[in-house]
Structures are given as structure tokens and as C-alpha cells.
Length: 212
Image (tube, rainbow, N blue to C red; front, top):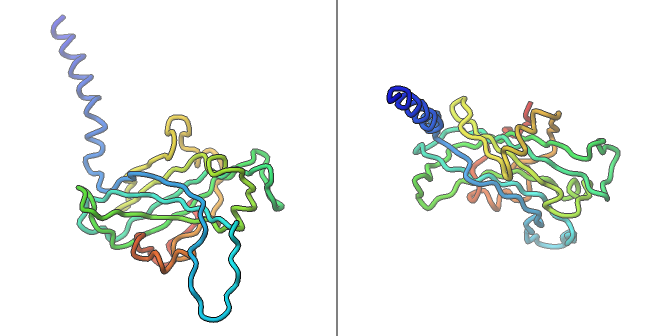
């Protein structure tokens, strides 16, 4: 009887340790995912300048990363974004299920260590332009973007996958429906560049591409 109890205990202990053993080589992880709707930065231009639309809001999805390598030469961040169509959706394309799964892959370069905490934070964003946001016709940020998943690749391996809301409820939703590329933009393709070039991680040129 004692031998059976000991065997069961050892099996339970081994299973309890398994996640930690699997993450021993994890060098970069997704700490947090934030979503916001905001106006684009305004730049001062000499002479006459076009009047900005005060109602125009861009979608910004930001992944905050924790990195343990002193320097990571290249890190690829894959974004999967659920975007719902609202009652005021515009355009020729509105799917029957009234939502898209948007995908974008961004490679950043020369990312500096920030874990254990060094005071530096590593942020990687993607954007959706204001006209496309209007086209979806969402009534609120929460209704528009109910879920986001971010996956990090480093040295050819998946380091981490994190869901903004609920992993168990959402599952790997990007595998259940055909993703749409070419809608989300990286920093270099947005009005936040160059003003935020030193706030966000440096994007490798031509690295933004649809995820297959």
C-alpha cells in the first residue's frame, strides 16, 4: 500500500513540474496585451496644413514583452486580432458571421534585455487606420475587439503565446477561421513613426506580413 501511495505521489509531482520544465528555455514572453482607439499624432507643419478629423480614431494593439537575453537580434511577434463588424458596418465585404480574424507578423531587431526588471520596457505595436476602423462600424472598443492573441518567435522557436482575455474560452481561434492579412500595419506604416521610434521596438524593414 505504501509503495502504491509513493508511486502516485511521484507521478503527481512529476506532472506538477512538467510546465516549469517545458519553460526552462523560454527567453522571451508576452507580459501584457493592450488595445486602444486613439487619434493619430499631430505634427506641426509650416504653412497651411490639412484639417484633422477629430472623430478619426486608429486602432492600436500593443504587446509588452519580457526579454532575458542581453540582446535579441531578431524577434518575430505574431498578432491575431478578432474584429467584429457593428450595426453601422460599411463596404462591400461583411462576412455572414460578422467578424474577421486579422493577422500580422512583425519582426523587431536589437531588442535589449528587460528581465529581471531593468527599468526598460519592450513594446511592439500594430495599427489599423481610422478609415478601416470606421468601416467596421463598431459601437465600442470592447465590442470591436473582443479578443487578441500574441505569439512570440525567437531563434526559430515559439517562445510564448498569450491571450488578452481567456485562453480556455477562445482557444486557438486563428486556426478555426481563415485569417485576413494586409489590414493591420506595423509602426513604420503608421503616423506614430518617427515620433515614437524610440518608444517602441525597432521594426525590421519590410517585416510586416500576413500570417499564413
